[in-house]
Amino acid sequence: MNSVPDSPGDTGTPVLRPLTARSIVLSTLLGHHPPELPARALVRVGALFGAAEGTVRVALTRMVAAGDLEQRGRAYRLTDRLLARQARQDDSRAPRTRHWDGEWEIAVVTSDRRAAPERAALRQAMATLRLAELREGTWLRPANLVRPRPAVAAEQCSWLTGAPEGDPAALAARLWDLDGWAGRARLLAAALERADGPAERFTVAAAVLRHLLADPVLPDRLLPPDWPGADLRRRYDAFEREFRALLPRYAAEGHQGA
Image (cartoon, rainbow, N blue to C red; front, top):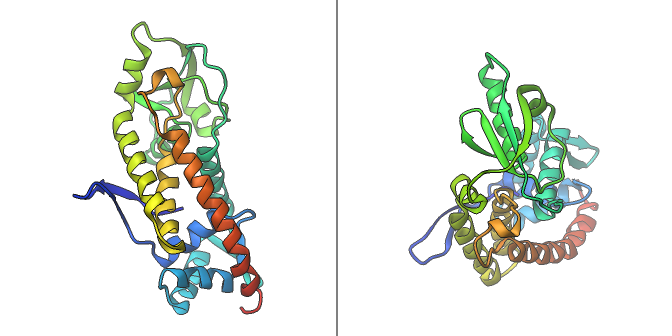
């Protein structure tokens, strides 16, 4: 999903950017398995947000031209690039973890003379792996996650394991803004609880899912007390069950038109 939580407003609620027709389509397909729906279904979802049919159809055409979607008859499906994004979102909701024995993953950049696109690709890969940068060219995190390493991370870095000599919780707090993440998570959880109607809940849920992508998913003993990550995931899962129950009606009706 594609909405972004900004800074809290004066009332202590998160400020959410409105969903455009493009982000409505992406958010719907990214949250749907398989990520393919008839055009009419996407038009009807757009109508929940006041998006005109013509606006949604123009967005679909532009997204196909941009390589975000591929058209199959009357239906639209995410392309491979966005399927990878969907996989990251799914992982953010249910990250695969393992017992943590105190070791950390450490990646040191060893590739020389990297072009700007290569550096950008590595930074994106490290974000996907949930590593933090200690200093330029040195990335690390607790070794408690199970996930493959993208090729770019293997090509540009040497990988080591080790443990800090000092307090690992203090190091984690230095690498990630844990209090900031937790504060925004609590605001979003409260906003999702207050949201009324499918459109408002959809918009808040989009922000929730994006926020979960930034959760470092640290071992419990490195987290502040009352870490809200698990609670936010439960609330999002409840929303998704609600949306999944609603969506088939739109999909079924969407099959009746182009």
